[in-house]
Amino acid sequence: SGVTNIKKVVIPGTVEEIGSNAFSNNTTLEEVTIEYGVKRVGQFAFKGCSNIKSLEFPDSITEIAYGAMLSCSSLTYIKLPNAIKKLNQYVLAGTAITDVTIPDKVETISGNSLEACKSLRKIVIPKSVLEIHGGAFWGDKNLSEVVIEEENNNFKFENGLLISKDGKIVYWG
Image (cartoon, rainbow, N blue to C red):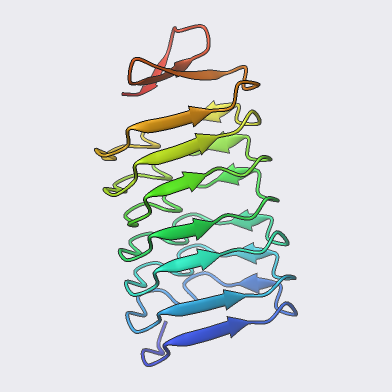
């Protein structure tokens, strides 16, 4: 992003997509309001926006692309949209989020999607999740509470390990 003096932005619902790198490395941006109607967030859209503290995505968004919030080092709160089906690679990597609830329609948690979230303590995984790819929680040293909905037939959290329901594969520990 070439603009470096914006502190607050409102993205109207008439906008369909926040393009790739739209605000990347804008270190002065502090507040982003995304109105209902926006459908997609592009790759690295907010990458390196180190002063954004919270983001709430409207449920009109169906995709948040690779690395969209990568290295948003002050981002402590996120509300993900209920319409997404995949948590893409590096989407929240390097943020300061403390807890995250994966939306009910997500089927895939991609590799490195929550990597290096040093403040992450709790994650809630819904029954819809079918796949968790390698490195999804790599470097999340403070993650101590993994809540998996009982109806999830694929995973369980037992003895500090995120494992397959049959106990044959360890995904994180």
